[in-house]
Image (cartoon, rainbow, N blue to C red; front, side, top):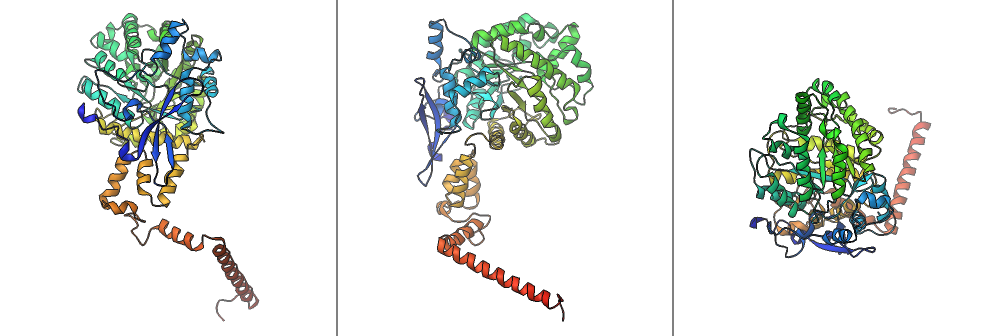
Length: 553
């Protein structure tokens, strides 16, 4: 892992890690501060935890610091450990709630800021979750809800066909470097437990899993041997390790299967297909549904959140918004209400492939059927012909559904459906989805969402090239593209770009106009000239009409 020691170096991009102190609790919230050439500073949300601190050394065996360890220890010492939902319902603001409020504000104070009380209210209402298994104290508090910044998840995980523990930890680190808000470990094959342990101990963002994958590995992939007891033991194992949220396909029922099997692409969710086959073999109802309250009681002990669904998500746009998908959605809404009775936090997983004209219906139905619980969607992909470019076809749908109210977006890489992604695929997927999420934040008028855009626009007009690079989501790529044509260092101060050149740059021309007519006296003269010209044109028009309006005499 030595080669990763410098991947979090912020200094080359004019940035550094800074901390904002809490007012209610003795907490320190990490942010990224970007210093601009004009002396201004821009604070931005940072998911990298301690990795971007000066002189931080990566040590997989040791892991990273446990930022929440003292908070949970104090609660257990006082015999006062409950879920974040329970505290919120009791009117209690926790350190975690103040922490996420500070993060969401990105250093902005005054009007329109997110307060700890707003965080508490949204969690209490079930409209937001703060995933925080006390066994994963390395995770910095974050929030998922429609009133807050749209978050993104990055899927990682080894498979029976390839990858290693080190590679998966590297992918997790790589994902958070580029801004992933959570990661899901979807490992299959060997070493699932060890892989997950290493990921958890080295990841400062919430980690999710699909427990069904490991449960099936325990019975050597034989679905007919899968039992509730095996699954429950797997849940306990992952709870103890520190997983923050579980994808649990408890909403797919026997009565949904006839409609699902008529689809163009059938059941594309791995968890959904496993349970469908199990129900067919055993002629019984989904054991995750029948044992749901037992799962609630277990998750409550650790403050683990449900991610309910998406066993019947459409795998093609032809199958979008069908009877099977919306039938499952209704069940998920019923299960969410049961979880809330147990003080367990819930998000609802949504569709995968949906054409643009059907996206709105998904969001509207989810709000009604699931009582406003946060929505978490894969894309959706708005077209099925983008093999090799599905990060783009999905980001189009992701930006749209994020604007409409979805709280978290699951990224798609260039290799979706094609191959296991490498670290470069992870970077491209994460950056693409951060842009989709940011576009959604702007569209839904999140407080100060445009501040960074305004800063980079100002830098662009003033030809502050370094600021343009450093304010972008991927400075390295921006610099590389610029240097392909204009590699010389003086070009980073030039008042033109390679596309326009020195004589045809519209912004340079605009600047010259502004210099000539920027003062009040020059502007008055310009207006007077324009008025004189307009008056002359009017006089000529009247003379033309008086002479009969003929073009030729």
